[in-house]
Image 1 (tube, one colour):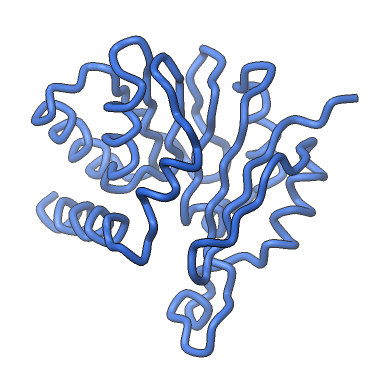
Image 2 (cartoon, rainbow, N blue to C red):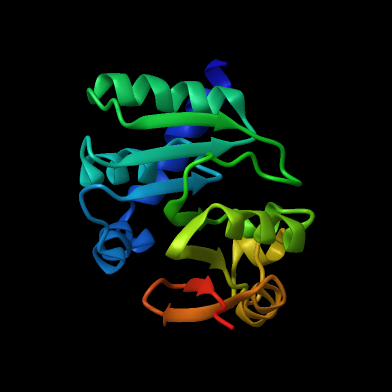
Length: 192
């Protein structure tokens, strides 16, 4: 467990670095009091904790991850920060376990490339969204001369994400390019 707690802390440290632009990401999302958000691939819970503070007690955050020990770490951080609006959910990587209630946002940061059955996965997420709900995907894009994530295959090109999301029944709401070597796209369900 200790090694996974160290890994969770390392993930949080990386997310909080200036070059990760976490403040800019959060300001861009305009999360408000009462929102309900699932942080998929929550890792060490950096965004889970920040979201929980923003939505206050009227909102709720679901930390969803395949690693039980990361989720335990998040529970401890929630307790330390006196946050009672976080629920952890252990899931498998192929099909997500999602909350029964409809959500405002699904937030996926640096996790898209880990999903083995993306089309089914994305379609299931759509069932958990409110009418105007959004899926936020931030993913390494493989750009840059010396890119660790590209070397080890930890990236997905933005055009692949856009194409797969379209096949799964989503359309682009907004795209941003302020994060170096990462795409940042917000999707909504396609209206027909």
